[in-house]
Image 1: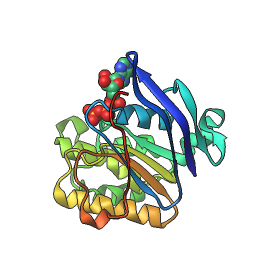
Image 2: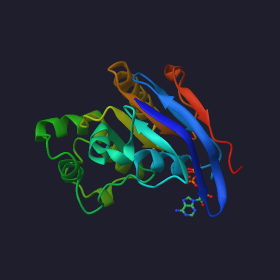
Image 3: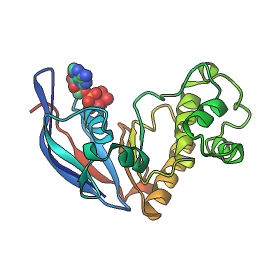
Length: 203
Ligand SMILES: Nc1ncnc2c1ncn2[C@@H]1O[C@H](COP(=O)(O)OP(=O)(O)OP(=O)(O)O)[C@@H](O)[C@H]1O
């Protein structure tokens, strides 16, 4: 599916990682690990095509992602470090905005999955941090993307919510998808299948 080849990233004249190489196959769940500032977010942004690497390539189905931007944006779903939802809009309006192809029935099912039923019309700005994150995560129930790239998806999510997300990741991988995520939390034992890639910090 995804191949990362000799990828190097420099920020503020510091090499965050150098010639990083790994691949992600259908069925994989990969956790990018490392201390604060190691470059996890920088790596995920490179994978999502939001920034350019100093060196190396990110390949999707054997083609560089920079040569197939539209296909790549359909193939992957990137949820960034911040919830990335519009604060003045409601959860329902946010999900309608991001998933124009989904009807309201599907959107309400997704809101139910993240336990936001009853909050669908409340402006996101008035929701708690965990609820705001859940609005973004509801997109996992609506997206057709096969690769999920998730930066700190578990931040502010309670224990039961984390278990539910883990089950969702496993189900997605079992259905031929793949997940790349970062988190500082210890993942529950139920996700023993997670493969870890460690960034050690500036080299
Ligand atoms: N656009 C940028 N311009 C300059 N420096 C940057 C930029 N983006 C990131 N950095 C620097 O790169 C380093 C790595 O940042 P990054 O956010 O990738 O780390 P991280 O591993 O995700 O950290 P955390 O665990 O704290 O989220 C930091 O020192 C940061 O200041």
